[in-house]
Length: 159
Ligand SMILES: [Zn+2]
Ligand SMILES: [Zn+2]
Figure: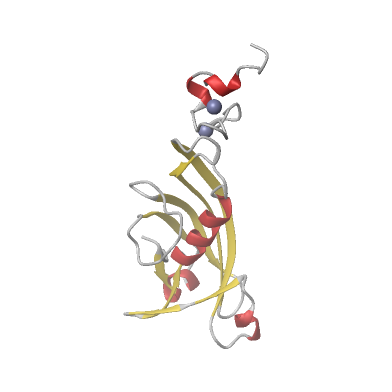
């Protein structure tokens, strides 16, 4: 579960334990989504003053991307800490990008950590993935994957 009624948070800090799956509506077009089963979320939400709630937790998952050097498909573990504030509309800092708004659920306002998990995930996912720090990449002339061996252009001209 990744969404909690503010009433239950006000009654005492709640433990967050859940999974943001790759098909969740929190993901947007163009996001680098996690592999299945998704991003594992663990943490707690506590009240931080009237109408304000603090979520502190860790996220972990795996992502599959194309290596920026050799274009092979590679997977990497992604893990990060997420610390964010949620506030209801009565607060002026609602326009602060680091403060997430509450959402309206069936039983009133709720702290829904999914968008915060998404942002934490996207900040941590590598912009350019590399399959290995030693990746030799592709030959710029013939396109051979140099991890699999040298290509003929690699020979020195005098040979
Ligand atoms: Zn590579
Ligand atoms: Zn070559």
